[in-house]
Length: 315
Image (cartoon, rainbow, N blue to C red; front, top):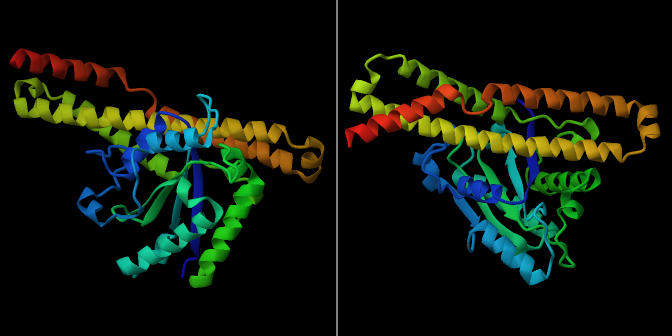
């Protein structure tokens, strides 16, 4: 039997991207071009353990103002916790049993972060592996807006991971604790992004193949098909570019943190070299993704203009 791991990951959000993660979490989008794993026919099975009072951004700003916090344009306003487990863990479990897992995880979060700051906690059952997106405003107990103090360094992240595993293993003794990223230095771009990028690349190839049909713009139904596919592709590329920027910023934060460490000690233990190799690997991963997705190709933009021109002539 494969090892079963309890999984807790954090991400920080500052501005416009808050609306995008809300659209994904709350399933308010009509299509999910960048995530083909979403099966909207199963979205009614998703579970809200905490339902949003209003939009994430509006509620975050309300809480921040009420606490009397000053903000900058680059202030982290929302932290998202992604909670799940290895796919093997959920096999054979009934919906009620899956819910119990996430309810226990929610109680753990509430012990470590004020319940009042939680914007939403929703379990997605419409993807391959059940998982929960839990978003909160990073307000400290003394009402300061400080994501860095809550999750912003390796010591705090290790504390969260240790506490999460100790909580979950009491009810689920088969769960193992994965080795901490603070020990392994792992900070790779998740495989999910490569899968989404591959999906977009295939979609691009399909569009270009359709455009080779010499009779394409003589048939209304074909024009509609191309237009729909282009719209999905453009939306997917925009979402992917947002993800790439986020991981690029995370890499910059990691680099800045490394520079603040005592280099003498790190080099003496060999850790400095390992971290630089890790950083180089992640830079390479990001560059591979950028090359795979990149900007929207000129030929796709040209095709969009041709479709729009054709439809205008039809009117």
